[in-house]
Image (tube, rainbow, N blue to C red; front, side, top):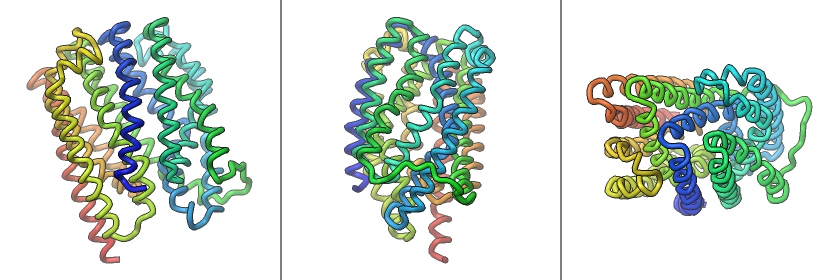
Length: 419
């Protein structure tokens, strides 16, 4: 299956997810408002960190090694799967206990109140379910069962629509936060039976496995941990800065425009993770790698340009449909946010090469550096230009990041040719 076909399947999944999110965002906007959207953004960032740590942050490694050995050595493939399950269960149970014990402290630090401590207890108790689900999805991705992968994601979107709508209407912010946890946990009840039935692999608890398998997966763990911590903590820091410098409403406006970016770019990001990572992992020829990335750009650039332009022209209509008139002040953020999105997708196409080829040191340095620069740019541009500065920062940061990715890509191809 090529990138175009993967993108088309991703588009179907994304359309369903977008439709689901449209209803969810409207419900959240009506029942919670801009301040509630900001708090949900805080929790989503925290949830991203916890769920990544909960499976040992090895999902990219699982996808890579399952793809790499699926055709050549099924025994090694199954060993990596067994190791992944062991790591996930061990880490998620320990981290879950820590969340339960420290629930009041975490609630106080994240929300400035302990009244949401029960949410973190629920998260701690279900973390092992969430971890296993993400590992199973990584295995499906590595096997390049794209249709199955998309089907599970569609099911997750529909579950999210039902649970988030019902719980938010009934319990407001409490319900929205609880739905974010329950949907991911319940999805295991679908992904596990489906994987057992559809995939030609056995989920065995193998003993006496060589430590080299753990080391290989944990190398990817370091990259994933650094990535999710950098992204999530940076967004939390920026949101806190906007609250202090402006108000919690402004933080909510920024979170809302960020949500729009995430939704429309989902077609590309899903295709990159489901197609590019396993594909680039298995390619060794320089010419094939270059051609694969160029073919990706032929789809990515037109899609992002057309989508971003359409969203900018229809921004007032989109705000009213997705949110409420209370969110109109966010319209000033759109232009530079969308321009930054275009630069982001151009750079991410190249950045996936670092993960696929295990360029751990380069990846970690770039992630930390650009997370810091995003926060620094936000403070600088906001002090100079006001609230719109946060979108300036997004745009400038990814312009510099794209230049770096082009340099890394050129250097990688140069050294591969010399080998």
